[in-house]
Length: 228
Image (cartoon, one colour):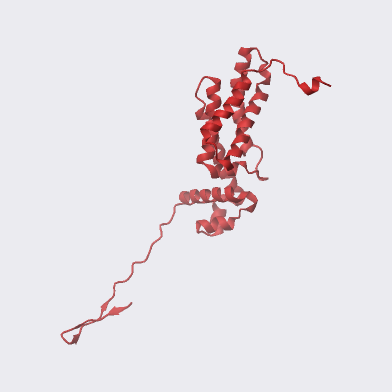
């Protein structure tokens, strides 16, 4: 330890120890906090690079932990990815389900479109993770599975409308898939361009779908097929 001395009245005083620097202490995370940190970091890297290009080494490096810590929590990259995707699936589905409150079908379309676009805008990393296909997961754990769940909800709404208007309710599933697919693909496009604003995008989606639904033919046919 460094010492300092003083001279007073021609006499050297006894050296006084210099004040020691206080050691910096790092706050140790609990197991739950560490797990959340790793999930957050994994979510970001999977969004940036996709599953294949992501490594446990990079996750550990960004978290400033050793690789065994990551393995201890998730068993490997597949386990971490599955947790991240499961959270995003539930988050998006809950957001859309909660948004569907209006009784009028047109308002329901607006709410569903705005809910999806809002998720893309506010949870961009999560949406990027969902739209990247991974060989690790089955069809029950990706963006397509979420859209299928939403389509089933829309199907029930359309089925009741079709019955009241004299259309075949068995076709409600087909129309539900078409409507949800239109919104989902537009959302993936909007993820990159981010214009026009989400309210404008939702309004045009509803304009196309609602005005198309309101002028449905009872038994549509193909012009090209009839001309042969």
